[in-house]
Structure formats: C-alpha cells, structure tokens
Image 1 (tube, rainbow, N blue to C red):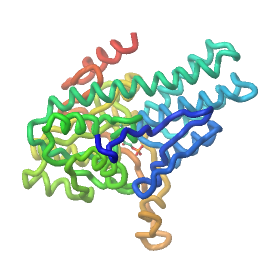
Image 2 (cartoon, rainbow, N blue to C red):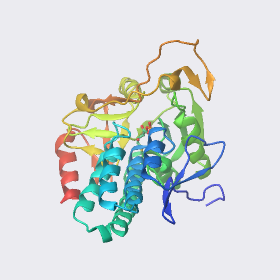
Image 3 (cartoon, rainbow, N blue to C red):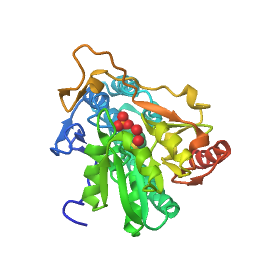
Length: 345
Ligand code: MRU
C-alpha cells in the first residue's frame, strides 16, 4: 500500500478520549479531534465532523463509554444514551448502537461499567469492519470486468470505520482489477463526494473523476456507466432505502437506462421495525448549507431554501441489497428478515 494508502480510522479511542478524524476539514487538512465528554461527541455528530450511518453509531458507542468515566456513571450513561440517540434522525445505526450500549449498561454494575462499555464499543467497530470487508467481496462479484461505477455521497471508511460499504465494494473490485473508472457525484450541499470519496479513492489509487450531481443522466445516456453503487442510512423491512439526497434521482435514471443500482449496507442499517420508506424520518438541516458553499454565499441574502439531507429509493428500483450476509434480491422482505434474524439470534 502506498504512503497515501495507509489505513485510517474515522473513530478511535485513546487514553480515555474519543478520537475523530474531523470530516468537515477534509480534504484540506487531516485534523483529529480529542473529545472527553459525550456531549462533544453528540455535537460532532450533529455538525457532521463525524458522519455516515455506521460511523455515527460507533462514535456514539464510544461517547457512551466516555460517559461511564463520570463520577455517577450509571446516571451519566443513561443521559448520554438519550442525548446521543437524538443527534441525527435518519441513520438507524445510531439508535441501534446506542441501544446496544444502553442494554449492556442496564445489566452491568457501576464498577464494571467503564471497561464493559469500552469493550462493547470496540466490538461494534470490529463487527463493522468485518461487515465492510464481507460486503466488499460480495459486491465485487456483481461488477463486470472493466466496470465504470457511479457512486454518490461517501459510503467509504470515513462513513463506517476504515474500509467502507459502497466504497468497500469499489475497493475490493479494484483489488481484483475490475474497476476501469469511478464517477464520483460531488454531492451538494456538503460535498461528501468531492471532498471525502475523492480523498479516499485517491489514497487507494482508484481511477476516478468528480462530477456535478446533475451529470449522471448525461453519462448514463452516453453509455459511460455500468453500475451505480451507494450506501444507505436506513433500509425498511420491505427494502425501501433512505440514503443521501439525490440517490432516488439516480435510481430513476438507472432504471430508465437499464443499469443496475446496488445498495451496500450492513445489517445494522436494516430496520425491520420500519415497514416501508414512508415511515423513515428524513432529516432536514440548516438552509444555510444550501445557500452557501465552502463558506461563500451562493444565493441572495435572505433567499428561502430547503435542505433535505436524505431521500428514499423505493425497493422496486434497487437491483440488489448487499449485506455482510449475502446479496438480497427482490422481494426484499423475506430475504432481509432471514439475514437479520440470522445475525440477531
Ligand atoms: O449526511 P451523511 O454524510 O451522514 O450521509 C451519509 C450517507 O448518505 C451514506 O451514504 C450512508 O450513511 C451510508 S455510509 C456507509
């Protein structure tokens, strides 16, 4: 692996502190935050210094472990779990990870709480890494030789822990020599594609080009895309999948062009308690993220704006859902239930 290609961790723990690679500063600077209070972890999730569904779950798990170092650990962990779960609404990995921490805390004595919660956070991170690698191998099988992939947002190691889901598929396929090119949607308003996915793919030496979000249809119509691969923030029981705003648009385009759209996500993103996409809460963020770009205003002062962070792609537009347990095909309900129950039991 080249110097540039050295592994990184989006979330880590060192000497009683949560370490986060500040994703708002990438790609200009690699700055690591050292956080000693769970409230700072909650704030970092809200401001997207750490982002991506699995990564915010892991960060919150370590946040709960931080709370266990307080003078009254049981009460502080309970407060932390409540506060951290509310930091962002759409990615179910956040509440899933916090629930794991809360359930363990409830059956652990105050003396044992800190080491027990730290170990559990480490397990969640390690399980995510194993899931990423399994998803990568399964997804790489689906891509043809010489594949030109289009991806949206960042579903890489920055969004999970170190390897990535959709980018894990691309990295694994690249390692097999199957990737001819990756089209990276810039992903307005916060440019996770241009800033983060391009940063990760360059470290891995994967051939790629950043394009504006409105370029996908043009590329597909010219026959320059073979597959679309994205991550997800929450997959409902019927396979409807919430992901970064613009994914639904890509799915409609891909269906029109007869191209496969694959969703790569761990089973912790599958929410069997949510029947379909209409019940997935969609985060709406500060309109200033839309009216500005890179700190520069791009709309007249006072212009109204709406900032929906996610949309829902109906299951019918998804060619396959790749999890660590296999490649689910429609109808997704039974396949996702079997995979999830296999993990949970
Ligand atoms: O708002 P973000 O940057 O947290 O949104 C992230 C995404 O939409 C990712 O595609 C998703 O979380 C999957 S990450 C493996």
